[in-house]
Length: 184
Image (cartoon, rainbow, N blue to C red; front, top):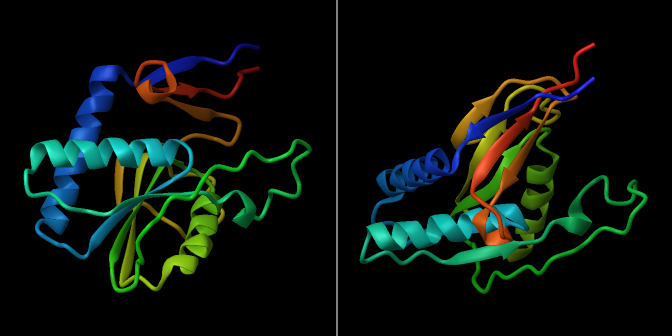
């Protein structure tokens, strides 16, 4: 039984999606100096960096604080894995009190990563709002009542399927692959 691989986003489509997300953010938050962008380590932080850079290219007077959030030890499953979790650095040098936080991750699946991020964000203040930006929204199999405010593409798939996001920053090409569940 082989898993079928389908390309959800090619490099060209990937960049179009990033541009669309940037335009949606600019439309909604425009001149707001009260908004910050925080990416969840590791791929969410890379995507947030890409979004931050692209908006600054599109908009000359763009000033939005940008940070990276590690959630390794806030996850509810980190003690359950057999291998030692690999923590990354949190880099947020600003308070989020009374700010609109744009939280970025690559894939929204069960919602547990976002739950951990919400817990971790409490250490940096009390925001007015938190909006979620994801590249891929896997609507099925959500375990928590969490949904994306902005998403690149939506995938309806069973548990045995999975999504892989490849980023140029990691030495490859930008693309999103979908591995279907094996058929019998």
